[in-house]
Length: 314
Image (tube, rainbow, N blue to C red; front, side, top):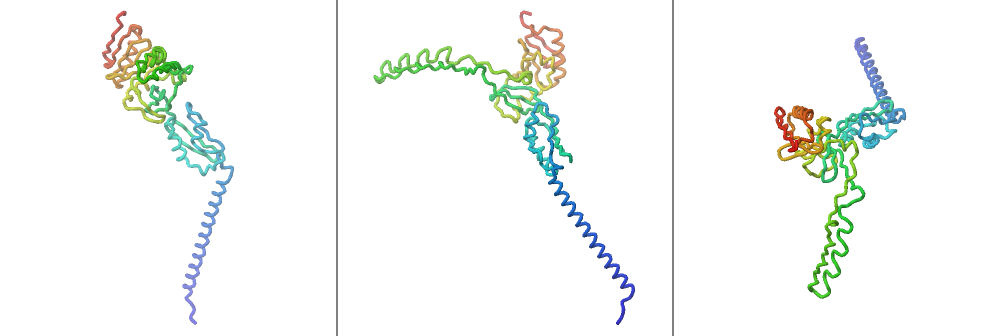
Protein backbone atom coordinates (compact mmCIF):
# COMPACT_ATOMS: atom_id res chain seq x y z
CA UNK A 1 0.00 0.00 0.00
CA UNK A 2 1.34 3.39 -1.04
CA UNK A 3 1.52 6.01 1.68
CA UNK A 4 0.44 9.62 0.88
CA UNK A 5 3.20 12.02 0.31
CA UNK A 6 4.06 13.97 3.49
CA UNK A 7 3.18 17.29 1.78
CA UNK A 8 -0.33 15.99 1.03
CA UNK A 9 -0.79 15.08 4.68
CA UNK A 10 0.35 18.54 5.77
CA UNK A 11 -1.99 20.26 3.30
CA UNK A 12 -4.97 18.15 4.46
CA UNK A 13 -4.22 19.03 8.07
CA UNK A 14 -4.10 22.74 7.17
CA UNK A 15 -7.45 22.58 5.37
CA UNK A 16 -9.11 20.75 8.24
CA UNK A 17 -7.68 23.27 10.69
CA UNK A 18 -8.96 26.26 8.62
CA UNK A 19 -12.37 24.63 8.34
CA UNK A 20 -12.53 24.15 12.09
CA UNK A 21 -11.54 27.75 12.77
CA UNK A 22 -14.13 29.01 10.26
CA UNK A 23 -16.84 27.01 11.99
CA UNK A 24 -15.81 28.43 15.34
CA UNK A 25 -15.92 32.01 14.01
CA UNK A 26 -19.41 31.46 12.60
CA UNK A 27 -20.56 30.06 15.92
CA UNK A 28 -19.09 33.03 17.78
CA UNK A 29 -20.78 35.53 15.42
CA UNK A 30 -24.10 33.69 15.72
CA UNK A 31 -23.83 33.62 19.50
CA UNK A 32 -23.05 37.36 19.48
CA UNK A 33 -26.07 38.16 17.33
CA UNK A 34 -28.32 36.08 19.56
CA UNK A 35 -26.94 37.86 22.62
CA UNK A 36 -27.50 41.29 21.07
CA UNK A 37 -31.04 40.34 20.14
CA UNK A 38 -31.74 39.15 23.65
CA UNK A 39 -30.22 42.32 25.09
CA UNK A 40 -32.34 44.48 22.74
CA UNK A 41 -35.49 42.61 23.67
CA UNK A 42 -34.64 42.91 27.36
CA UNK A 43 -34.00 46.63 26.92
CA UNK A 44 -37.45 47.20 25.41
CA UNK A 45 -39.02 45.37 28.33
CA UNK A 46 -36.99 47.06 31.02
CA UNK A 47 -38.59 49.81 33.08
CA UNK A 48 -35.18 51.48 33.22
CA UNK A 49 -35.60 52.54 29.57
CA UNK A 50 -39.25 53.65 29.77
CA UNK A 51 -40.42 57.23 29.18
CA UNK A 52 -40.50 59.03 32.52
CA UNK A 53 -41.15 62.61 31.32
CA UNK A 54 -42.36 64.45 28.22
CA UNK A 55 -40.89 67.95 28.38
CA UNK A 56 -42.32 70.75 26.20
CA UNK A 57 -39.85 73.50 25.29
CA UNK A 58 -40.60 76.79 23.51
CA UNK A 59 -44.39 76.89 23.92
CA UNK A 60 -45.54 80.18 25.44
CA UNK A 61 -49.04 80.65 24.06
CA UNK A 62 -49.99 77.00 23.62
CA UNK A 63 -50.78 74.77 26.60
CA UNK A 64 -48.03 72.25 27.32
CA UNK A 65 -50.68 69.74 28.39
CA UNK A 66 -52.47 70.15 25.07
CA UNK A 67 -49.23 69.56 23.17
CA UNK A 68 -48.49 66.44 25.23
CA UNK A 69 -51.93 65.07 24.41
CA UNK A 70 -51.40 65.63 20.69
CA UNK A 71 -47.88 64.12 20.82
CA UNK A 72 -49.47 60.95 22.22
CA UNK A 73 -46.41 59.76 24.16
CA UNK A 74 -47.56 57.93 27.26
CA UNK A 75 -45.39 57.59 30.33
CA UNK A 76 -44.03 54.04 30.61
CA UNK A 77 -43.66 53.65 26.85
CA UNK A 78 -40.30 52.04 25.92
CA UNK A 79 -37.92 54.74 24.68
CA UNK A 80 -36.60 52.43 21.96
CA UNK A 81 -40.12 52.04 20.60
CA UNK A 82 -40.70 55.75 19.98
CA UNK A 83 -40.96 57.05 16.43
CA UNK A 84 -39.85 60.69 16.58
CA UNK A 85 -40.91 61.39 12.98
CA UNK A 86 -44.48 60.28 13.64
CA UNK A 87 -44.70 62.45 16.77
CA UNK A 88 -43.36 65.46 14.84
CA UNK A 89 -45.89 64.91 12.05
CA UNK A 90 -48.77 64.90 14.56
CA UNK A 91 -47.67 68.16 16.16
CA UNK A 92 -46.88 69.86 12.84
CA UNK A 93 -50.57 69.61 11.91
CA UNK A 94 -51.46 72.12 14.64
CA UNK A 95 -51.90 75.73 13.40
CA UNK A 96 -50.00 76.95 16.47
CA UNK A 97 -46.88 74.97 15.56
CA UNK A 98 -44.49 76.40 12.96
CA UNK A 99 -41.72 73.84 13.59
CA UNK A 100 -41.11 70.94 15.97
CA UNK A 101 -38.24 68.64 16.92
CA UNK A 102 -38.56 65.52 19.10
CA UNK A 103 -35.60 63.90 20.88
CA UNK A 104 -35.21 61.26 23.59
CA UNK A 105 -32.43 59.93 25.80
CA UNK A 106 -31.66 56.76 27.74
CA UNK A 107 -32.74 58.43 30.94
CA UNK A 108 -36.40 58.30 29.90
CA UNK A 109 -36.72 61.98 28.93
CA UNK A 110 -38.57 62.93 25.73
CA UNK A 111 -38.03 66.57 24.73
CA UNK A 112 -40.48 68.25 22.37
CA UNK A 113 -39.07 71.57 21.13
CA UNK A 114 -41.71 73.84 19.62
CA UNK A 115 -41.45 76.96 17.49
CA UNK A 116 -44.83 78.66 17.71
CA UNK A 117 -46.67 80.72 15.13
CA UNK A 118 -47.36 84.10 16.66
CA UNK A 119 -50.50 86.18 16.04
CA UNK A 120 -49.96 89.47 14.25
CA UNK A 121 -53.50 90.61 13.42
CA UNK A 122 -57.19 90.01 13.95
CA UNK A 123 -59.99 90.11 11.41
CA UNK A 124 -63.74 90.11 11.94
CA UNK A 125 -64.89 87.20 9.81
CA UNK A 126 -68.35 85.78 9.19
CA UNK A 127 -67.60 83.20 11.88
CA UNK A 128 -66.19 85.46 14.60
CA UNK A 129 -62.88 87.16 15.33
CA UNK A 130 -60.14 85.37 13.38
CA UNK A 131 -56.66 85.52 14.92
CA UNK A 132 -54.07 85.49 12.13
CA UNK A 133 -50.39 84.46 12.16
CA UNK A 134 -47.71 86.19 10.14
CA UNK A 135 -47.85 83.57 7.37
CA UNK A 136 -51.61 84.07 6.95
CA UNK A 137 -52.74 80.96 8.82
CA UNK A 138 -55.83 81.27 11.02
CA UNK A 139 -54.75 80.32 14.54
CA UNK A 140 -58.20 80.44 16.11
CA UNK A 141 -61.73 81.75 15.69
CA UNK A 142 -63.17 83.55 18.72
CA UNK A 143 -66.96 83.49 18.85
CA UNK A 144 -68.11 86.58 20.69
CA UNK A 145 -71.42 86.38 22.56
CA UNK A 146 -73.60 89.50 22.94
CA UNK A 147 -73.40 90.90 26.46
CA UNK A 148 -76.58 90.51 28.48
CA UNK A 149 -77.93 87.89 26.11
CA UNK A 150 -79.31 90.50 23.72
CA UNK A 151 -80.54 89.16 20.41
CA UNK A 152 -81.28 92.28 18.40
CA UNK A 153 -84.82 90.90 17.85
CA UNK A 154 -86.93 91.62 20.93
CA UNK A 155 -89.63 89.32 22.22
CA UNK A 156 -92.31 91.80 21.21
CA UNK A 157 -90.83 92.33 17.76
CA UNK A 158 -93.52 90.05 16.37
CA UNK A 159 -96.44 90.60 18.74
CA UNK A 160 -99.39 88.33 19.31
CA UNK A 161 -101.57 90.84 17.53
CA UNK A 162 -99.30 90.90 14.50
CA UNK A 163 -101.73 88.49 12.82
CA UNK A 164 -105.02 89.14 14.63
CA UNK A 165 -107.99 86.83 14.87
CA UNK A 166 -109.79 89.05 12.45
CA UNK A 167 -106.97 88.78 9.91
CA UNK A 168 -109.09 86.26 7.98
CA UNK A 169 -112.68 86.66 9.14
CA UNK A 170 -115.29 83.97 9.09
CA UNK A 171 -117.20 85.88 6.41
CA UNK A 172 -115.03 84.75 3.56
CA UNK A 173 -113.07 87.59 2.10
CA UNK A 174 -114.97 90.51 3.57
CA UNK A 175 -113.65 94.00 3.83
CA UNK A 176 -112.31 92.85 7.12
CA UNK A 177 -110.77 89.79 5.52
CA UNK A 178 -107.50 91.56 5.63
CA UNK A 179 -108.21 94.02 8.37
CA UNK A 180 -106.04 96.93 9.28
CA UNK A 181 -105.18 94.99 12.37
CA UNK A 182 -104.25 91.93 10.30
CA UNK A 183 -100.79 93.34 10.21
CA UNK A 184 -101.09 95.74 13.09
CA UNK A 185 -98.86 98.71 13.59
CA UNK A 186 -97.64 97.04 16.73
CA UNK A 187 -96.97 93.79 14.89
CA UNK A 188 -93.74 95.15 13.57
CA UNK A 189 -93.16 98.22 15.66
CA UNK A 190 -90.45 100.74 14.92
CA UNK A 191 -88.65 100.00 18.13
CA UNK A 192 -89.13 96.25 18.28
CA UNK A 193 -88.68 95.04 14.71
CA UNK A 194 -84.91 95.11 14.92
CA UNK A 195 -83.42 96.20 18.22
CA UNK A 196 -80.08 97.92 18.58
CA UNK A 197 -77.27 95.35 18.23
CA UNK A 198 -76.16 94.23 21.65
CA UNK A 199 -72.49 94.93 22.43
CA UNK A 200 -70.26 91.88 22.15
CA UNK A 201 -68.22 90.48 24.99
CA UNK A 202 -64.67 91.90 25.01
CA UNK A 203 -61.77 90.10 23.41
CA UNK A 204 -58.95 88.71 25.56
CA UNK A 205 -56.41 91.51 26.19
CA UNK A 206 -53.63 89.77 24.25
CA UNK A 207 -55.91 89.59 21.20
CA UNK A 208 -57.49 93.03 21.59
CA UNK A 209 -54.08 94.73 21.24
CA UNK A 210 -53.47 93.13 17.82
CA UNK A 211 -53.99 95.40 14.79
CA UNK A 212 -57.42 94.87 13.25
CA UNK A 213 -57.73 94.44 9.50
CA UNK A 214 -61.03 95.67 8.06
CA UNK A 215 -62.59 96.02 4.64
CA UNK A 216 -62.85 92.37 3.57
CA UNK A 217 -65.40 89.95 4.98
CA UNK A 218 -64.79 86.23 4.58
CA UNK A 219 -65.61 82.88 6.11
CA UNK A 220 -62.81 80.63 7.31
CA UNK A 221 -61.84 77.88 9.70
CA UNK A 222 -59.03 77.35 12.15
CA UNK A 223 -55.92 76.20 10.31
CA UNK A 224 -56.98 77.67 6.96
CA UNK A 225 -55.11 80.30 4.94
CA UNK A 226 -56.71 83.75 4.65
CA UNK A 227 -57.64 85.07 1.17
CA UNK A 228 -54.83 86.59 -0.91
CA UNK A 229 -56.57 89.97 -0.95
CA UNK A 230 -55.55 90.37 2.69
CA UNK A 231 -51.84 89.66 2.15
CA UNK A 232 -50.65 93.28 1.92
CA UNK A 233 -52.66 94.32 4.97
CA UNK A 234 -51.20 91.38 6.88
CA UNK A 235 -47.66 92.46 5.94
CA UNK A 236 -48.39 95.92 7.36
CA UNK A 237 -49.88 94.47 10.55
CA UNK A 238 -46.88 92.19 11.06
CA UNK A 239 -44.36 95.07 11.08
CA UNK A 240 -46.49 97.98 12.31
CA UNK A 241 -44.29 99.80 14.85
CA UNK A 242 -45.66 100.19 18.36
CA UNK A 243 -45.65 103.99 18.26
CA UNK A 244 -47.78 104.03 15.11
CA UNK A 245 -49.94 101.10 16.23
CA UNK A 246 -50.82 103.04 19.39
CA UNK A 247 -52.62 105.72 17.33
CA UNK A 248 -54.12 103.27 14.81
CA UNK A 249 -57.67 102.03 15.27
CA UNK A 250 -57.52 99.57 12.37
CA UNK A 251 -55.97 98.83 8.99
CA UNK A 252 -58.58 99.24 6.28
CA UNK A 253 -58.44 97.78 2.78
CA UNK A 254 -59.83 100.21 0.18
CA UNK A 255 -59.99 100.01 -3.59
CA UNK A 256 -56.68 101.75 -4.17
CA UNK A 257 -54.83 101.84 -0.86
CA UNK A 258 -54.19 100.41 2.56
CA UNK A 259 -55.36 102.98 5.09
CA UNK A 260 -54.47 103.34 8.74
CA UNK A 261 -57.63 104.63 10.43
CA UNK A 262 -56.43 106.93 13.18
CA UNK A 263 -57.98 106.80 16.64
CA UNK A 264 -60.29 109.78 16.93
CA UNK A 265 -60.54 110.31 13.17
CA UNK A 266 -58.28 110.86 10.20
CA UNK A 267 -56.66 108.57 7.65
CA UNK A 268 -53.07 107.64 6.80
CA UNK A 269 -52.93 106.33 3.23
CA UNK A 270 -50.05 103.88 2.71
CA UNK A 271 -50.77 102.73 -0.82
CA UNK A 272 -49.44 99.17 -1.08
CA UNK A 273 -47.11 97.23 1.22
CA UNK A 274 -43.86 98.31 -0.47
CA UNK A 275 -41.29 100.65 1.14
CA UNK A 276 -42.94 100.30 4.53
CA UNK A 277 -39.91 101.46 6.51
CA UNK A 278 -39.78 104.72 4.58
CA UNK A 279 -43.54 105.19 4.90
CA UNK A 280 -43.44 104.61 8.64
CA UNK A 281 -40.61 107.16 8.96
CA UNK A 282 -42.77 109.70 7.12
CA UNK A 283 -45.66 108.97 9.49
CA UNK A 284 -43.37 109.43 12.51
CA UNK A 285 -42.18 112.79 11.20
CA UNK A 286 -45.80 113.89 10.88
CA UNK A 287 -46.71 112.66 14.36
CA UNK A 288 -43.86 114.70 15.83
CA UNK A 289 -45.07 117.95 14.24
CA UNK A 290 -48.85 117.89 13.80
CA UNK A 291 -51.72 117.56 16.26
CA UNK A 292 -53.69 114.43 15.34
CA UNK A 293 -56.94 116.24 16.03
CA UNK A 294 -56.21 118.37 12.95
CA UNK A 295 -55.60 115.42 10.64
CA UNK A 296 -57.93 114.73 7.76
CA UNK A 297 -55.58 112.72 5.52
CA UNK A 298 -51.87 111.96 5.44
CA UNK A 299 -50.82 110.42 2.14
CA UNK A 300 -47.44 108.62 2.27
CA UNK A 301 -47.79 106.59 -0.90
CA UNK A 302 -44.66 108.45 -2.01
CA UNK A 303 -42.90 108.65 1.37
CA UNK A 304 -40.34 111.23 0.21
CA UNK A 305 -43.12 113.71 -0.61
CA UNK A 306 -45.96 113.09 1.89
CA UNK A 307 -49.15 115.08 1.38
CA UNK A 308 -51.05 116.35 4.42
CA UNK A 309 -54.61 117.61 4.44
CA UNK A 310 -55.87 119.16 7.64
CA UNK A 311 -59.43 119.46 8.87
CA UNK A 312 -61.14 122.78 8.05
CA UNK A 313 -61.07 124.05 11.65
CA UNK A 314 -57.27 123.79 11.75
